Length: 111
Image (cartoon, rainbow, N blue to C red; front, side, top):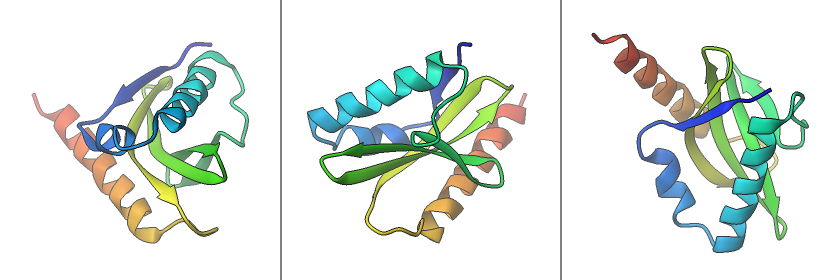
């Protein structure tokens, strides 16, 4: 199975480019797993709510989350990321992911 990762606008890159090199490398490693394996391990990828998924990357005791969703079955659209500081997912981050996904579909439907 091969999935395609696509980035929506600049939100993911704004997050990614601020990270230390070793965290960026770990994220790239997790992306390789996501695009190449049939069954993505739950420790890296899980459904959050309403079709929004989180890509979870742990490095040096820190946890980084990248929200994404599927489009056309195999396409994983990367929305935005953040460093998680507590057990509970911040509702403002979930709201932001839903808003970005809506923007993506609104733009896709325009002729």
